[in-house]
Length: 252
Image (cartoon, rainbow, N blue to C red; front, side):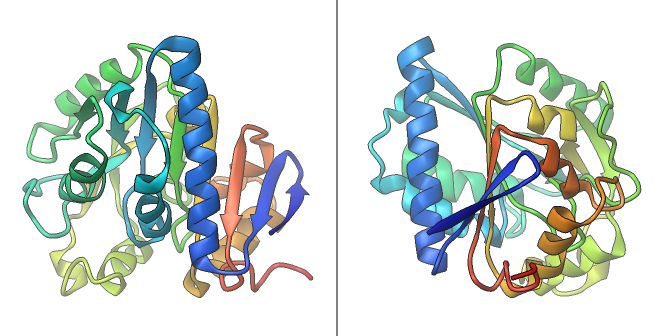
């Protein structure tokens, strides 16, 4: 593993995707254990999607008292059932709750009225500080579902309904979650960028070549909502984990 700073952001370069996941899981465990030691509990936001497989596959081998951890997730499609194959509630249930058995998991209800549900989830998030957010970067540079040109770096909202861009719709199809773009829900409830960056630490896992252009734009381009992930350049509490494929478009 080697590392480099891109402005305030620490970036770790790993030789394999498995190494990426193991390092990110080890870092996450250390952050969670420190929060438990200090506060008696920890509050963690977990992203979903294919980019998070390496870290969630490695987390069960870490020594963490999950009975003292409360888990949130960062987005959910509007109008989708919790048992739908592409539901992020299902993803969290199967890959986090059933594997790790945390004290509590707060789910975003995609079947509820979007504004009412967003306000309810904001209230839960505001009950105490967040210790850790584990997230990725979308193929179009989004964080959670905060889309280019729509994302806000300074909104007071912590959860809100967002219309998905065609690029995000295609990504969901390409990852195998939906058969066609027409099948992907048009909007999602998503944590905002201020909510994600409010946590004490952020771990950003971005494997795969299809994310390489977004990674390069986020790290070497201007800080702009046209590439929401570029805000990570100003986030000293974050660590970005890359594999050779996702780092392939960065200057050598």
